[in-house]
Image (cartoon, rainbow, N blue to C red; front, side, top):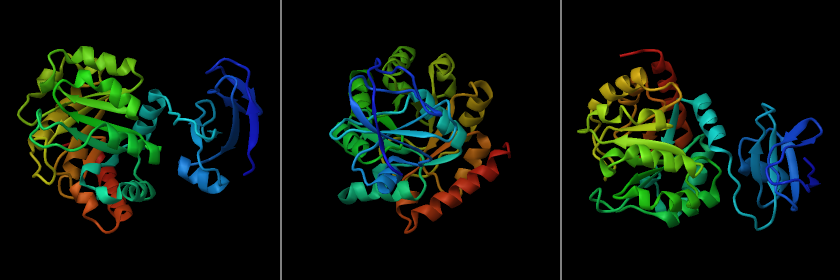
Length: 312
C-alpha cells in the first residue's frame, strides 16, 4: 500500500477529515506518513509497507480502518485506554501470557512469538522483594517490552507503596496498572490517580483476603485481578477460593469491569474460572513450557469460550 503524506496545521488532537476516514489524532506542525487499511498490528503494517516504525491509531468512527503515523525517531503513540478496554472486552476471553515465565535471554524473540501466536495482551509481574519475597524486574523491562510490541501491557505491581511508582510505570509503557489492595490504605484514591494518568486502573487481592474488601472500590476499577496463588513465584498450584471470588465479582461488579485470574492456570483450571466469570487468564509456566505457543493459546481460548456460558 503506498504511503501518502499528511501535513496538519491543526491543533494536536483535532479531528480533520481525510477522504472517507476521520483522522482523530494529529500532531500539530509535524509531517507524517499515513497509511489506511486493515492491519492487525504495527508489525504487520511495517512488514507490508517496509517502514521501520509505524504507530497505529484505529479510528473509532470507522470500524475496520486503521490510521498509521510514521515519523523517524518519534516516540511510541498509544491507543486511548477507552479503546484498549473496549477491544479487550470485545476479544474476551483472552489468555494473557505472563512474561515472568519466558526466556529472558531472548526476550524480544519471546514477545514476537506470543504476538504471532495470537496473544491479545501481555502480563508483566513486577516484584520488589518486600511486598513479595521474590524480585523479578522493573521499569527497564517494561520499557524494553513496550519498544518491541504494540500489544496492551498489563503491569501487575506486586510492590509496597505502589503509589510512588505508578506514574513511572505508566511513562514506561504500561496500559493497565494493577496494585494489591493489601499494599495501600486508600485504594480508591490510587485507582483514581491511575485513571488520571490515562491508564486502566486495576486492583488485585491475595487468596486469604476476603473479596468483600473490594466492595467500595469496584466503581473505580477497570479490572479486578483475582490471585489464585500467593504472589511471588510462578508454577504454584491453583487455589479454588478464586472461583468463589470470581462468582461474587461477576454478580456484584459492574459489567464493564474486566475480571482476570492469575496463578496455576492450565487446561484443568481455566474452564472453571471461565464458568465463574473470568475474562482474562494469566498463563506463565503453562504457556512458556509449550513448544507451540499458538496451539496452546488457541486451545485454551476455545476452552474458555465453551466454558463461559456454563455457570458454576
